[in-house]
Structures are given as C-alpha cells and as structure tokens.
Image (cartoon, rainbow over all chains, first blue to last red; front, side, top):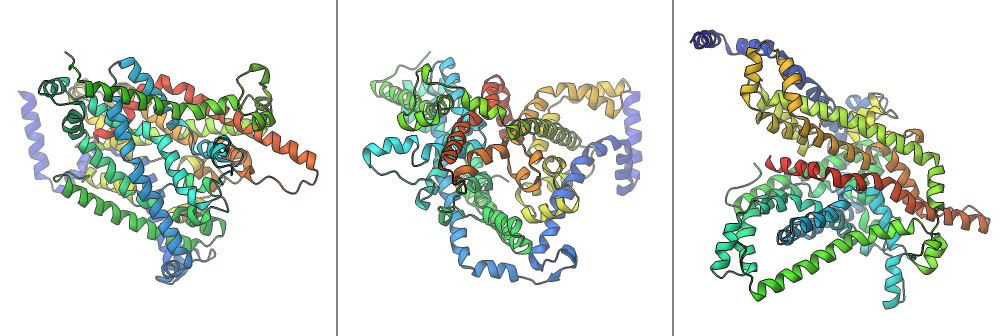
Amino acid sequence: MENTVEVDRRGAALRRRSSTGRVLHGMKKHYFLYLLLAPALVLTLIFKYVPMYGAVIAFKDFSPIKGIMGSEWVGWKHFEKFLSSPNFDVIFMNTLKLSLFGLLCSFPVPILLALMLNQIRRASVKKNVQLFLYAPNFISVVVIVGMLFIFLSPTGPINHLLAWITGEPLMFMSDPKYFRWIYILSDIWQGAGWASIIYVAALANVDPELHNAAGLDGANLLQRIRHIDLPTIRPIMAIVFILAAGGIMSIGFEKAYLMQTSMNLPASEIIATYVYKVGLQSGDYAYSAAVGLFNSVINVVLLVTVNLIVKKLNEGEGLY
Amino acid sequence: MAVKHSRFDRLLLSLNAVFLALAVLIVVVPLVYIVVASFMDPTVLLNQGLSFRFSDWTLDGYKKILENPAMLRGFGNAVLYSAAFAVVTVSVSIFAGYALSHAQLAGRRFFMTLFVVTMFFGGGLIPTYLLVKQLGMLNTVWAVIIPGAVNVWNIILSRTFFKGVPNELKEAANVDGASEAGIFFRIVLPLSKPIIFVLALYAFVGQWNSYFDAMIYLEDAKLHPLQLVLRSILIQNQAAPGMISDQLAMNELKRLSEMIKYSAIVISSLPLLVMYPFFQKYFEKGVLVGSLK
C-alpha cells in the first residue's frame, strides 16, 4: 500500500515538472544507461557521421594543405566528369549486371536447398548434410579466390577435364566473358548453404499434422510444398529479397578486387574497385569520393523503391 | 503418424536424396582436392593429377609454409586483431543495446534512428580513410579495430535480447538495493552469456576472414594479418616474376610458390573448419536471432 502511495506522489511530482526538467531528472537518475550508450554513440558520430559530412569533399577541389573544409567549392564538377567519362557506362553496367544477375541467381538456391533439406526424414542425416553445406561459409574470400585461380588456371584440374572435350584450355580468369559467371557461381557455392538456415528453421516449425491432413486429402508432395511450405517462408523471402536488392549497388569490393586480372577488367571493374583505385591508389580523393557518393545515393533510392514494390506484392508487408 | 507416400512422392524423395548428395559432393570435392594436393609435389600434381598413394605424398609444402616468417606473423596478428576486435565490438554493442532496451532512456528512438541510418548510408571509403588518416590511426592496430567497432545489427540483436529479460529480476535486485550498474553487471550480463558468445564468435570470424581494412590502413608488412599474407601468396604471385634470368632458379621458385599455395590454404582455413561443427549450434542461433529482428 505504502508503495503505491509513494509511486503516486513521485508521479505527481514528475508531472508538475516541465518536460526538459523531467528529461534531465531522468538522465541524472539513469546516468548509468547513458554511460553505457556513450561509447557506441561517440564512435558512430566520429566514424559514421563525420565522414558523411566529409563527403562534401566530392563537391570540392581537394587540396591537402587547405583540408576538406578549406578547399575550393566546385559543385557538380566531379559528378559531371564521372558521368561523361567513357568509363562510366562500362563500370556502371558492370556493377549493375554483376549484382542483378547475382541476386537473381543466388536468391532461389537457398530456398530450394531448404525445401529439400526439409524432406530429409532422419534428423541425424539432415544434420550432417547441413554441416557440409554450411562449411564453405567459413572460408575467407582470399582463400576462395585463391582456390578459383588454382582450379581454373589453364593447367588446373577443370581445364584438365575440359581438355578431353574441347582440346583447348579455356582462359577462365583472364577472359572477361567468364568473370560474372565465376563470381556468381562461386558465391552460390560459398553462401547458399548458410543462407538456407533461416528457411530451414521456419520450415521446421510447420505443424506436421498439416502435411498429414493434406496427404490424406490426396495432395502429393509437390502440392504440399507449394501450399504449405512455400506460404510459410514467404515473409522471410520478402525480407531477404529487399535487403539483398537494397544492397545491389554496394556489391562487395573484396571479392571482385581479388578476382581482377589485367585481362578481365572490361567485365570486372565495378564502382567499388574504381573508387579504390582512383582514390587511394592514384590519390584523386575528391573525384573518387564523388563516385562513391553517387553510388550510395543510388543504393538508398533502390532500397526504398524495392521496399515499396515488395510491399505492394506482399500485401502490405515490407521491411518498414 | 507419417503420411503414406504415393509412388510419385517416393520418386520425388529419391530424386531429392540424389540432388542433395550431389550438392554435398560439389562442396566437398574441391576441399578434398586442396587437402590432397597440399601433400603433393607440384610437378607430380601437374603431370599426373591427384594421387592417393601415400608414397607420393610429401610434407614439403607444410615445411616451407611453416618456415615462412610472414605467414607466422600474419597468424599471430590475425589472432590478436580478431580477439581485440571481438572484445571491443561486442562490449560496445551490448552496452548500447542494453541502454536502448530501457524505456527510461530519453530519446532512445532518436538514438536508434541515428544508428540505423548508418546501416544504409555512409560517407564512403574516401572520407572515412581521410578521417582515419587525420586521426593518426594509419598504420596502427586501431585502424582495423575502432572504425568498424559499432555494429548496428549487434545493437539491435542485443536490444531485442535484453527486452526479453524479465523485469521482475531487475526489480527484485532494485528492491535489494542494487545500483543500476550492479544490476547490469551482476544480474543481466551473466544471463546474457549465450548471446555474448554468439556475437563474439561472429565478430572473431568476420575479422579473421577480412582483408580490406588491413589493406587500406596498414602499410607496414609487419602489421599485416593472415589474410593479407595469404593474398600475396595465393593471388599476387599470379604474375610470375619475370626478372629472374636464370631459368632453373625461376622454375624452382615457381614450383615452390605453387607448392605452398595448397598448404597455406589448409593451414589458414583448417582452424575454423575444424572448430565450426562444435559451434554450429551457436552460429545458427546467431542467424535466427537476427531474423526475429
């Protein structure tokens, strides 16, 4: 009883205070929470928001002596230079194709794998198959690309096999026409198993009685998958798709850069690698920052657009 | 009660088994190839392909790679960076997640938005690089640990987790006179060991396997982590050094660089591949907690 009275009195006191006063009072009382928040907040402001401000370098003629803020303002000059350069079409399309094809090819594979894994009856068998399929996820990009160079070299095992059929070795890593396929297929090899985890977990929650009942009604396996399993994982599919599509233009630098050879550049030069080379290797900071900014903006636009579309298709369920 | 399968269903199920077995083979065969090749002389490998006769096998590749000082140093650096990164990023994220899970924290919506925005938009490579340079962090360990320390996903995950911790526990401690710090460190943190472990595991593996930050921020080869050393062994020697005029020496060098590729891959990937089955449970948990959002 006394307790409630105490709480009431405190509540009244709080209400009497102005809202700023209340906040300050709360901050004093819960100072520990603010203390816990502080490191993340400070690091984010410094390493995420200061660079966003620093992105104005894209609109300036950067001179290291004057610094970012002191350099001369040149407006859209660097953007115009990039958009009108002969490189633009190639690099932009390379980025778009690589990620778009990548998304379309690798999106269905984990779903298929999950549906298939879900049909394994024996739990121990299922667990072991998963163990193998997940393993490549733990191999680093450097090693994956190293393995690609080994397997696909003109004297490597794949060309050894192909020699029986074609007689001529294929120049996988130097011919631009193979670059995208190698990139995408090796991505699937590495990531599809791991990406199936969330689908497998969702499918495991389906009530087996549903399948039994449908089976008794004469539904065959395919029909049961279509009408029971697929609807179960549809919301997850939507979220995974939006996230992947939103990241389309931010396709990873790490792998593309490692896979680049001087010969396959016509297909393998993407915005991220271009920004790195022009900016950090040649030191043209302002121009390459403009290219990077251009890329980020496209990314945000894409994310918002895809979310809108999926919302429409998915009965109002989007990411946000 | 299991469904009685029609003939069509049984056919599908056998096809399913065949395709899954194929998928497993596709994953396993390249890995086995690398492991077997790591025990072979490159000339034999080139001329005859893989051999499973132990008499053909040699440990030279491993000897050479273990004699390589860059490799050993890279290994040590990678352990150090990954452990330090895991500690820093998990502490920072968990602290923030805990603070943000409290309704008493004024402005938590605003703070959350501040964090989430950075998941989708950033200043980009160049401004970040210039900032790190200006702060004097180039060529220091801090450059690979601090700028990426705030992981918004981890903040969201831990916030969700802490929201699930029953309030009665904290209230009971409060009644017993424990301070907010006491509640956090003595009651909530011990309860959170599983999620801390999962996040730390992810952070460790992520840092272990990455090379980008180290490549742009660490010029000094002595600071290079394992992945950068691997990069120079596996990828950069693609263009064989053409300056060596002595044909014999060049052949020997080529042979050597071919040989250590396989053992380098095995040595660098084995620790994770061997350990991961024991932690599989936790890794899966990490993915699933994430999907709850």
